[in-house]
Image (tube, rainbow, N blue to C red; front, top):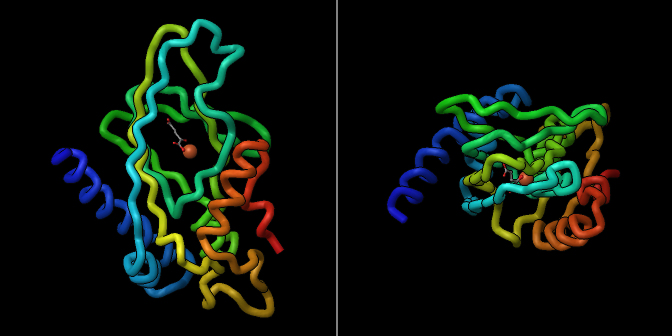
Length: 188
Ligand SMILES: O=C(O)CCC(=O)C(=O)O
Ligand SMILES: [Fe+2]
């Protein structure tokens, strides 16, 4: 428990570094996202265990989805994670001592679509079991989600409707079950 606690504190520092750089890319004040997220941030730690599977051609470890997070930080002990780009699946390599970070739905909404939530999945492996520790950075469920006002103007109107995170997560779980993407349901 102590190790996990220390790990989350250290990853928060890494996540904040990413939020500062994302803010810069968006031409916002460097601390804009850190401050905004800091006020009501929640971190969830999820362990995923994928046993060896004799039929990887028939069985997925985790089906295609985006994360309902701001960003997700993933530490895995083997390959298996795949990301989708332009309809093609790519393996995410394991780089020693490196973490995998991906943008989630909340960041796509906050950034008014500048950053896109990553479609990803996990494939199974006949020879190896696999373990991943996923840190999901999210917000209090009462948070009203909408694009950052500085990123909305006449030239680039809001591309996502305002929605309470609680209601968004309900859509998220429903669409996860049906295999569609919740983010598509809040686009204007
Ligand atoms: O196991 C992994 O590497 C990814 C897990 C994942 O995508 C998730 O928990 O949302
Ligand atoms: Fe995921």
